[in-house]
Picture 1 (cartoon, rainbow, N blue to C red):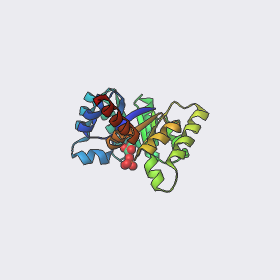
Picture 2: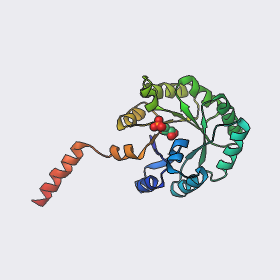
Picture 3: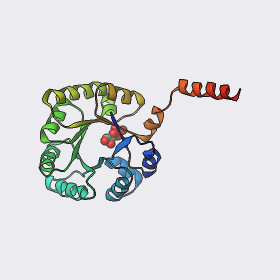
Picture 4: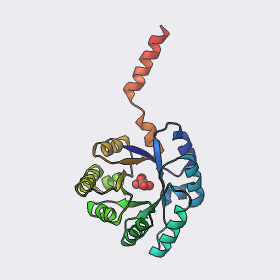
Length: 211
Ligand code: E4P
């Protein structure tokens, strides 16, 4: 499973860059707003740091307005992926962008029928939100597995990004249920390396080497 980082914070991206395991970046309007910076400015900086798919979300608007913004964003760099909300207009936009060979990531996916529409429209990626599905009282892990089954049944090329990852258990479930990618917040990435028995083992070996 490929690992993306879910952030618009440049320091976090710089901090994980040297690990060599982060193959892409996803942002959303809330993450951009948290940085208090303009979308285009942040995206340009991210592109200079990570050589992989970088998702930038279009603002809600008419299809023509969103298409105009999508085309402008896609011109920043060939690695730009246009993040499109899961709405009827969003699906129509994905169909238009697919014809132009512009990559898309359909976001706010919470069901198999939504995922099916996005795949049929030619989405490059879809992002089912594990954490928010769990909060809603359903299983984010089951959603990933069901969407993967649907994709395998019909041979779609769309890749699944497990999103709204809140903890390492989500990462584990995303990988066991077959997600192509997990987009992970910095805090959870840092937790993934840790295990109490690893710390204990390090302590035991350090003490042994002193003797
Ligand atoms: C996905 O691309 C979104 O940016 C993100 O994972 C949403 O996560 P949240 O539910 O923690 O806001």
